[in-house]
Length: 194
Length: 194
Length: 194
Image (cartoon, rainbow over all chains, first blue to last red):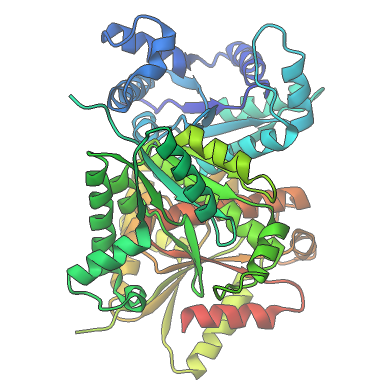
């Protein structure tokens, strides 16, 4: 009989520093001898959609009709659930994504239930700091939401996390990643993941 | 094979100016040659409940027991879904309604899933402006919530919208309809609906 | 044919004064000749888990694996639903509980749907007052969250309540229990329960 592995969903809006927090935490986990497979949800979507013959490049993902999207999303969820039979998994994804048509939920019911996570982590930041991080980011083209809209987005993500908790039983962990406090954020995530 | 028509759910608390925004947008859509059938959810509830023999007048709707209500609600959802086979549909309804027993959800799971919308629009306003609009409205008897309670109601509606998004995949679009900015609100709704 | 009995779920974070409000309201209801069975969700969990042989003491409840937990939770929900065939029921529980792994939802889908409540009441308080009540409480060991975290917790509970409303059709009633206004809170709960 095997002990159950953990499935952690890690989310955070652009500029929250999610990736930095995750990378530092994974390094520390390795020194503790704790194995995690890190899965990027978007990358998995693309790989499975390509394999199934629906798309050739990543831009085409958004153009799939909603039934195909649902089908691929469910396959990704099932793949993640399968990986978790062998090892702990951390899924790098979004609660909601801002699109011209509004907030698009990244964890709809069929995805949430197929992943069936233990914990959903929200990496949050101070709106002013996130705004500045975005403005000074030369490597990617980022939207320049006002601080008010950044707060709104983070608020919507909290609602999303609670809804996922209601559908799956997962806990919602809010981790603040403020400037000069990366160490704290990493420490908190470490406690969740180890 | 037919291209899929859009289903837009339009919501907003009393005084948000939802109806004004919708009417102006529908006029503009017509000049663009885009057809929408506008469905008032409450009116549909009444018509179907009357046809099925449950009520004679609109006041009796609230007195139906919850099983009957669920049944009628699902029939309305199915009717809307059917209309969308022929044309785009915009559904005028509420995320939550304030009742003496608390916030009543206008889009419970069985309604949301039977409508299966593409977008859920929240027409929001500044609490002070909504308060004033309500106080100066002679044509209807309206409750005079404090600004704090107006904000609370709009906040609850955001949570509701996200939950609907999780169950259906619909996006949540927040459109601000502030005084002297009707033009912007109409423009934003136009971009969603066209 | 029997008229349907009410199922009220009563929630509130530690220090909200939930229990005080409930006890005073139940006394008043008795003078009105209205019968309610008061069910503590946690106590029921323990009793059923013990009867089914999963635990011997209450501390072991949290150590049950998630499948067992789900099973017991569903049994509790069904028991509550059964009690409501004979009398009104008020269920004393939590929307979310703060744990080291984050906010744990007390009313996941399978619990909410098996209870199928009419109303979900949130007893809320001013964060400063709740903070002081917690600090001066000698009888229990309580965490000393900051006022900001108290507000955050109450906000998460509102999202939770709306999600439960979407899954079940229950209304969400927010009742403020501020210092020196217990009378108002009791009066509001009385109106919901009678």
